[in-house]
Image (cartoon, rainbow, N blue to C red; front, side):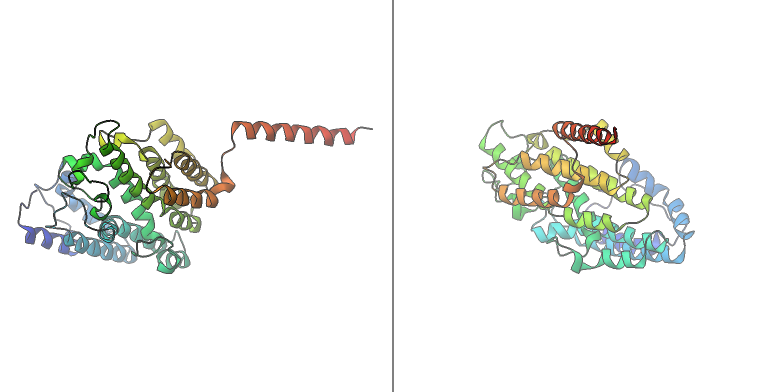
Length: 344
């Protein structure tokens, strides 16, 4: 890393970023990050000038969230993440800092910019309306945690190669019984006990993420502006599609698992309504539930999470081919009967 082992310098930059980088329209940084991240910092003065052109309420939200996010990230500087986060609580806290606060910031900006109401903001941020167990805040935090946990689960092998990890040790140590190391799951022999345990750990974490979905649906149901709804819905639907793709999938431990581009385009095109997103959540929850192995240690919990999603979205369930045929036949029969009654 650019800062090497000088953690104090890195922590200082993280904790002061909100008042240095955002307030100084000439501030840039070189030699940090790679590719697009490096270029962003090299030209951050442009971002600062855009930030300074915003309204005072919008600047206040961005500054506050940036400050708290920097402080949260500073908490993890110097921690050995080679074997993941330590506990589920720490896993949740990490996801809160890097994504949950983004959910809060966007929620507050939606109101500050006049797209959503003050009541929406209050309800979305209210911890009492949150049904998930992460204890990080309201529905807005569940939205962020759902996306971040999905990425962390999918990127197991990439993170492992990079020498960092975020899967919580409290979970994976239950399954890594050969070596007691998270890297034990990488490239397991096909059909081996190690592969079976890797899949069990994967399914455990997927289930943990699925339990956030009811909160995410509740948040999206409260949105009234169509563009804001679509903006929020697309990544959420992509996340549930990704969980469907990675669930009980051994390829997570040997390569890259991605949602097909054609399917992604189809989802993007149909995420503009409540019925549209419900149809996708119903489809993927049903598919995951269908594939739950009876022998999986998390089977009962996984089925319960899927059943909850299915119950919430069944009103928009896509019709099967057989159901469509029955519906069309019934409709035709009804039309003919009505027409017959009109005959003299």
